[in-house]
Image: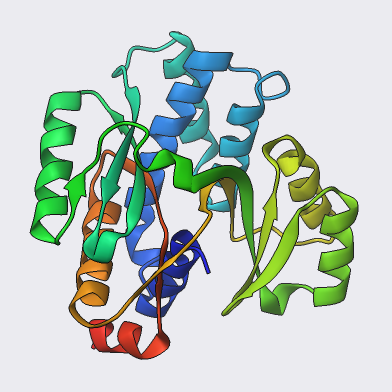
Length: 249
């Protein structure tokens, strides 16, 4: 089980998704702006922007907010200029992390991330010392109660997905980046909107955490998740159910 999907499960257990809608909107606005700046404001000609717009709509972001963020990216409206930076790090127990950020002040961001890592038994790593442990893939989560397993599996495999696995309350679908859009459309064709769908960094191996390391890893992920400049975090950890319950108690 990947660290990212494990964190998805932990957040679901904490009931944190609704409480952090403002954080989700902030992240999406930044991503919309950067995607539009890099590839233009036409969703039909900009696959990255199309994916983020779909995610924004799935999270019920108002259309006006989406369009304003895109206009800021294309320069039609004034706005803050963000820089996209990926940090590599190690967490408790030697867990590898990829931390994706969008920031208007990289010196502030790297200092704050370094502090959070140090607080929870981690540290920043040198460039390319961690990235090789991850593969860039499309990753979708579909809630189990919304679709028949066999129909979903057949649809996504026909569309080019690599694999579908059981991740607690949802199905996790993994695909190559180039088949991400067809797979997402195949899911939507079943009348289902994925709970989340994005290009992710999937770990190639996993570190099992227990005790203090497990607790510190959850605390670190919470802290990074709450940071305004952090867009995504991927990590190669696995934590048993009893360890999760103990950390959330």
